[in-house]
Figure 1 (tube, rainbow, N blue to C red):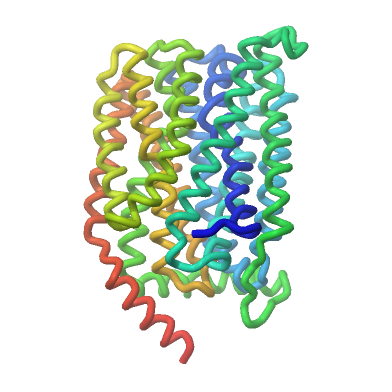
Figure 2 (tube, rainbow, N blue to C red):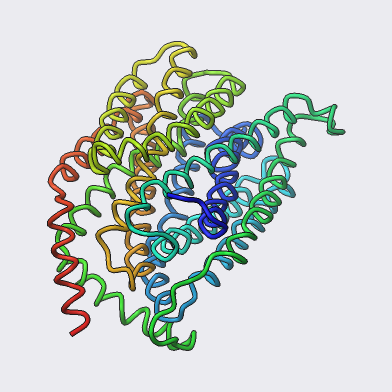
Length: 427
């Protein structure tokens, strides 16, 4: 794969939005929420609140994603909808700067809206990949995007961590003020590095552009049709079921790892260092997975990552010291980006190109529906057992079931079914 202005600008959106995923979603928000916005609550209650909020935000995307995808394809509006959701995420993230201590529900509300903006924008970002490079380059471009995200998110996170550890050097009176300011840095970063995509990445036009209000009506009408289309492409359906399960585990670990570490009594600084380790290990590893997929196949690459995640989850339930947490952070960094990127590129190969946003709407719907179940499962198990170790162990079931289903996905059969589907669609 040769990078050009178009593909580089597309990948730069990963660099842009990963600042949110790293600094806010995985890092400072769960940490700051427990210590600042919900410091009066006990550990199990705050875990439940955070998990429930993640799940509510994800439920909204679950409901909207497939319809939005159909609207985007019908109205040639992928970039416009991406802009809308990115703007929502950017503004709500900036709003967290103004939330005072103990304003628990305001913080959770802005956080939920920022998650909706972040997750919604990714539907249309993912769908744009099918129009900017050849199919043989999907793996490498997808992994390059995730690698850029790890590096970009890691660099801003490192800066924000340094700022919170040395607030006086930046004119702040406390670390809390520095953490709140970090939410503003994420918004600026996300906005600035999103601009190249909007200026340089083209959108494949459908044969007929539909007015937006008609596209919305047709989008809801298309929802039932899309379900039927996916059922015709049985391997796509099987892959989506597998993806729903194993990405549930991946996303839950991303969103709840800091909360889990705090429940075990580890120091916040140690948890931040672990996140930084994951980011910078993830940068070269995501690229490496792209080359690994070239030699062993995309599906095998994903399966390797799932097995590693399963082992990590079991080990995480038994850790005693922070050095083990660091080791787990390294191991997760080795596979996290690879699993996410190869899943995206594998799916792009087996869906109709002219309905990419529609099908990626379902892809992201299942990904976000996974994020509904996982955090709630951890939160409920934590409340029932009063044991964070049992709550993290429960996630291993998702990797086992997801891996089994993925094993039975046959890419060659999927392509045959796709060819037959495309022929019927033309006729």
